[in-house]
Length: 506
Image 1 (spheres, helix red, strand yellow):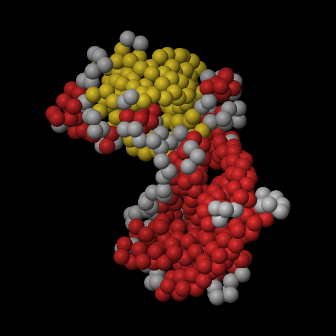
Image 2: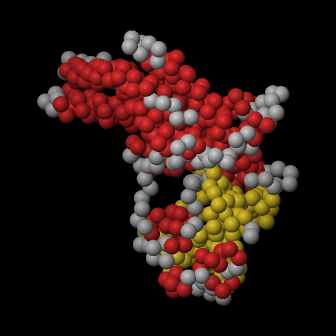
Image 3: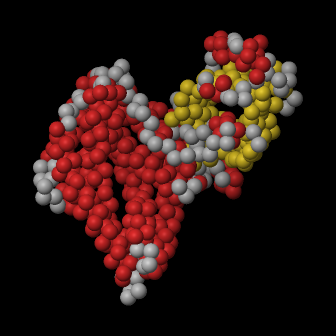
């Protein structure tokens, strides 16, 4: 069964001409433009979709092509699917021509009787063949039209890079070159997925980190790749919400995804190629700083300003202070959006996808053989967790007399141990890791509150020196911040003792 491998990227219609001005398009062959009208069939409760199968009837000229697709994975915008395609007589599905393993999905007569159109795509496709490297051929398609799901519709414009020959990573290389002339946004959803969401009236929502993909049968190299892919997926899906929606949880989750990704790099870096990791480490650090500044303002607004205003509703200065903070927050938010959608921000996603596909990270560093990367992950996971646990112990030696810098270093160490525990928990019994991670989460929460209260004076300073009228507002915020900090520091020794008593699950 053929496997379709394609990279999807959102494209603003205003930039189509700029995209086509790139040398890759100027050297392209077999250029064509055609109208494509597709009908997706499923049961009213989307039984096929739940099984990971899509049934599509597409009109191409005077012909109808029936396509069955089964999803086999999405990574950094790269969609890989098994695909079975055949010509049929009309726009009505012909299930008799479906063979092989896919036929089992349509065996039930009850399912066959309930099939109906659930979504439609109607678009114009401009396509051509690109030759980004020797031995590589990529079909580039600029699709522009409308997706309809149920009673809802939305316009779209996207670039698809489908690998016809050569390694999959060539699609990422081509996208990185095209990013030089036109803004592109890595797309995590297919047209069918967007149509399905409209059909079900399911708006996009912030997504928390998925369960760890690590399993006991994985090698070290396999576990690293799976974790990077998981963090990348977590980030990309929340970035789309961040750019389209004001819900601050999108930003929070995107930032968490980057922090988790940086922790993966940190944990595995002694085993991997330093040259391959250098650019991703530097660029994720930059992007995390861009998101961190906006997140600081979100936390300040929700957890400091809003409660202070609620407890001092007669303080007119707080309303003025809140308005000033909201204006500055919007400025910082726009800067964050620009960074995320920039060629640098999206280039990082494409670079990570390229390296995942080409497995360049898995080259052994220096004179080390790659045998370590082929070892089972379980033993190496214990070594990683031991090291992270020892760092936490060293950082917490002076927990009863903490200085701000020491608390900051302890918070970072605790966070990395927490992420490591989450990553490798599936390798151990739940009854062993759950109590430990619960104690660790409490410690991380307290240290996070202390860190937020450390940031508050810096943000107040950015709002400017208070005049006579807002002085009471500044004082109210400062007093609340001091109270939050004092309560958190009071909780800290007890949380530390409970964590120290928790038995390491590995």
